[in-house]
Image (cartoon, rainbow, N blue to C red):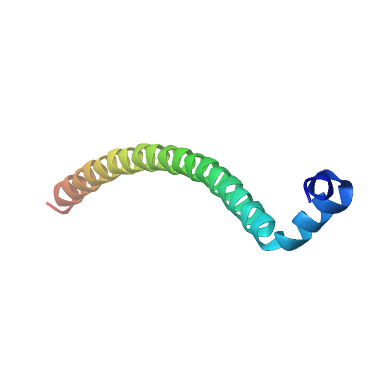
Length: 86
């Protein structure tokens, strides 16, 4: 019996009898590898979101400044209109 378990036939028989264990271990290794790559994807997405938030803030600031300038121009135009009408 000891001789048979060490022979190539014994090893093949062991693998044949424990295929479900081998498949399970392979599945776990695959799942862990996928989770690891998902973490990298999440980190990249988080970096992109931060960059977009920064750009949005810059654009909002620029739009706010333009709105202030437009309001100032409107007030000037209203003053000019009232002066011309009088």
